[in-house]
Length: 155
Image 1 (cartoon, helix red, strand yellow):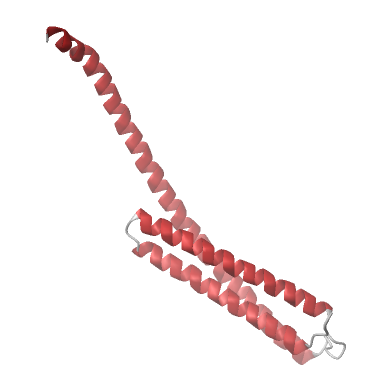
Image 2 (cartoon, helix red, strand yellow):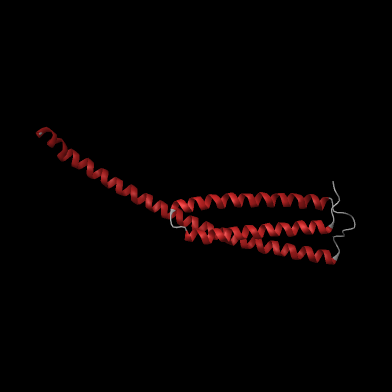
C-alpha cells in the first residue's frame, strides 16, 4: 500500500465535495427543467437521463470514498491527526460536505414530490379513462341487445 500524505487525503475530500456540488447542480437543473417540459415524453426522457447521470455521480462518489478510506489506512506517520491546523482544514471540508448532503436531500425530496404529483395525475387520468370506457361498454351492451338484433332480423 502506498503511503499517503495529509495533503493527498485533503485533496480527495475536496474532490469528493466537488462531485457532490455537481450532483447538487444536476438535481437543481432537473427540478427546473421538469416544470418546463410540457409533454410526458419529454419528462420521461428527462427523467431517464437524470437517473443515468445521478447513478454515475454516485458511482464516482463510491470510488472517492474507497480511495479516501485506502488513503487513510496508508496515512504516513508524519501526518499527526491531532495537528490542529490539519484538523481545522478537515473540519471545514467535512462541514461543507454535510451542507452539500443536506442540500442534495432537500432537492431529492422536492423531486420526489414532483414525481408523486405526476404519478397522481396519471393515475387520475387512467381512472377517468377506465370510467369512460366502462360507460361506453354499458351503453353498447344495452343498445346492441335492445335494438341491434331486431334490426338485423328485419333486414
